[in-house]
Image (tube, rainbow, N blue to C red; front, side, top):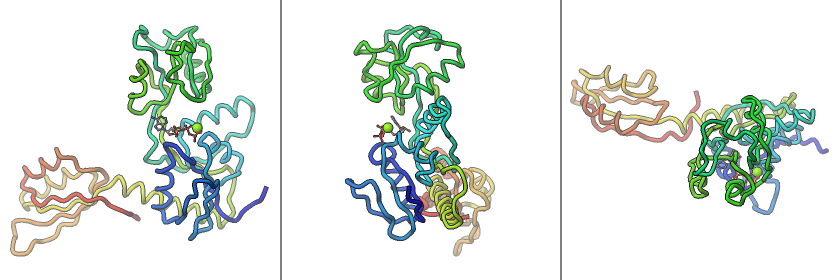
Amino acid sequence: MTTSNRLRIAIQKSGRLSKDSQQLLKSCGIKFNVNEQRLIAHADNMPIDLLRVRDDDIPGLVMDGVVDLGIIGENVLEEEQLERELIGKRAEVIKLRPLDFGACRLSLAVPTEFAYQDAASLEGLRIATSYPNLLRRFMQNKGISYQDCMLKGSVEVAPRAGLADGICDLVSTGATLEANGLYETEVIFRSMACLVQAPGELSPSKQALVDKIMSRVNGVVQARESKYILLHAPTATLEQIVALLPGAENPTVLPLNDDTNRVAIHAVSSEDLFWDTMEQLKALGASSILVMPIEKMMG
Ligand code: ATP
Ligand code: MG
């Protein structure tokens, strides 16, 4: 295998994580163009290569050190770890951080007419899934035996097709389940996309690059979760108004021209400011309330 000086990052080629993964890396200042036909995209401005692969391959590539970093759903990562533990293969990764996309849950679901009480209602029945290891761990912990029906896709049609009695599949809104006459009965795993690193030490230059990327990822994610808030407030209610701003530390208070009864407040809030709070601020005499997105942040 060639050992490259360039940092290799594996991301999903096409699917639910692709756009967000690419966007995150671009927001971190990594410049690259993706050619749909090609597996590798070289960054123009940093020694980084992006490997665009099936999401199922990403945990293994990271665990085996074929790539240095990967962006992957925790569901796929955990499933691969359990699979490898079973066959005694190396399954370590360094979890750098969860990301703010790819939220979903792995759930049990059964046909609408199924009288489900708890997981024990599935005793001895057949369950279709693409996540046999996560399902087995859940059922073993509950002491319930069941039969497997391993499907890589179309899991949600298995009960109607007579292949299984229930399913264990990924859900985000539940619309797909409903469209297939199923309902969700139990969440067995909650997942987000996450950034992972290969086990072992990186060369000093690669480590320095990972540190830089991590600091930028932290800034990007933090910025996306934050808002910049500006408003005018009566000095009389200043304290109450500041207390209402979600997660805003030490706001800047500035005098207003020709108005000694009011001040301007600038604050960075760690959360969005909802309509309800804006209405409460207004009731306390605040005016000219502006809520703005933040593009980048560095502590
Ligand atoms: P690939 O061709 O890369 O194997 P895939 O079909 O296995 O793609 P996608 O459907 O693109 O995978 O989902 C990728 C990941 O997106 C999932 O493993 C999960 O972490 C996340 N995800 C978020 N919401 C959902 C959802 N509603 N259904 C499925 N996956 C979801
Ligand atoms: Mg996949």
